Amino acid sequence: MPSPILKVGLLEEPKSLNPWRSSDAWSSRILSLIYQPLYIRDPESLEFVPWLADSDPVYDDAAISYRITIRDARWSDGEPLTSEDVAYTAELIKAFRIPRYYANWEFVDRVETPDKHTIVFYLSSRRATFTTRSLTTPIVSRREWEPIAGPLRNTDAPLPALLNHPLERPVGSGPFSLVEWKRGGYLHLRRNDRFFGKGRTINRRLLGPYLDGILFKLYGTSDTAVLALKKGSLDMFWWGIQPGYLKGLAETDHIDLHSNEKSALYYLGLNLRKPPFSDIRFRRAVAVLVDKDFILDRLLQGHGVVMDTIVPPGNRFWHSAHVPLHGKGLTRIERAKTALGILRDAGYRWEVPPRIDDRGIRSAGRKLTDSKGNPVPPITILTPPADYDPMRAQAGIFIQEWLKSIGLSATAKPISFSSLSEQVRVRREFDAFIHGYGNLSLDPDYVRSFFHSRFDRIHGRNTSGYRNPEFDSLSDLSASTMDRGDRQQLLHRMQRMIAGDLPWIPLYNPHIIEAVRTDRFTGWVDMPVGIGNWWSFCQLKPVDRR
Image (tube, rainbow, N blue to C red; front, side, top):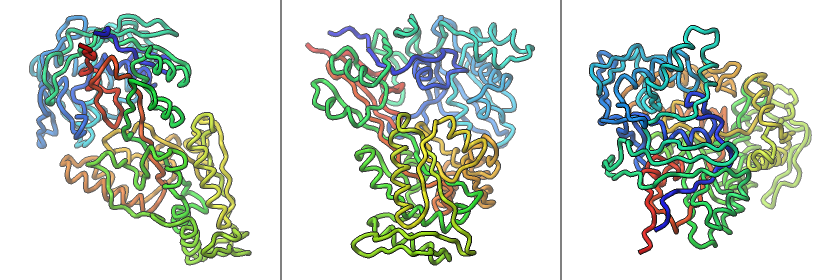
């Protein structure tokens, strides 16, 4: 039988193994196998299932509290994992106001630990995201962290000191623990025989891990990682495979390709604070012109789905399929004619009108004015550069040409990602931009933060300046609605409102395609986040060649 050491390729090195600092994908992937939360998602239903917890949380509406019991578990150093560690994790996040986590814990008023296996969280107000976000926070060891955090509490800059603390050997409760990190070369994790799930059936799955360990090898480019995969020196490349590599991998023996819909969103954002996008009729004309099916076929080669709302369709419970569709099923000529009709009905006029017939767009038209006779200003579509994201850059060019086809002055302008963020989130000096979120939470509370008027501020997530009192009321209600079915209806209404008002025009959601060898290990589990998940690493087994 092959050696049960899984070899996984990474494009970049983790920035840190300090769980409070690790915001990059590479650190998060390593640490997900070391630190564990109370609840995780089922790979099929996407419902939450107890992980470190041993049952569902018990909610008391009168007290606005949740009672949770945890399994018998130990840290990788052999010490018991108790309710005090869970309470300490919450207290540490609140005391240091740790970014990425604080917003999920600031409304927790207090935490009680009646015994070593029971925790009671008391909330200051009803928050729907407590179960979906707060309870998915990785739990840390009080014994490990208090000697680090304690001396920092009364210093002038406690948070930077905590985030920058170098952690060489994290103490975790996960299926693996760190053996060695040779910077610039590899990370070696070995099986944690104290893992609470080992030999236990959780959510109908008998867990290992059955691997001796995992060797994470660093590669600077996809080219070298894909070549290593073909030659058999890698078992998995933990990154999405670009379309150009697919044919060669599909033709290589002992390689499987796994395709999963991501929880992602790529979109055209519009600045509603000024003309022309302050006019909803203009936005609707633009939405009709944007051919999402063409973008999907041409840029993603069909490896993705068209997005008509902000919540990906793979997020089945929260996604609303009943939203306004702009230009769906129309040909290019029909789109142009429909957009022209919308603008003409709204009082827009051209000095030289566009000429369109059934055979095509004969001339685009010139010098468009609005219903008050004001010239419609030129439109600049900001995109990342092609070397950062070729799909977003090319989508900007397509949209530019579709707008120009009916006489709208439009230019796609690639700029650095940092400059794009500065223009959109800080200076707010832009017309339109193409952006994306590659890893959206499966809890769609982001719909609220993307569009609530409260977040229309510098560095706020409401980048378009969308302001709608009815939407604000619905989103505030959704954040405090504890009944899941009632909250679903609110989120569906919010999606319909955004799809109708069009502060953003959703474009596409790419599939994540990952490649693995089949001649050494079997048992990969597919999820919207891809095959690199807890369930996979706890169930992978060496191939028995006997």
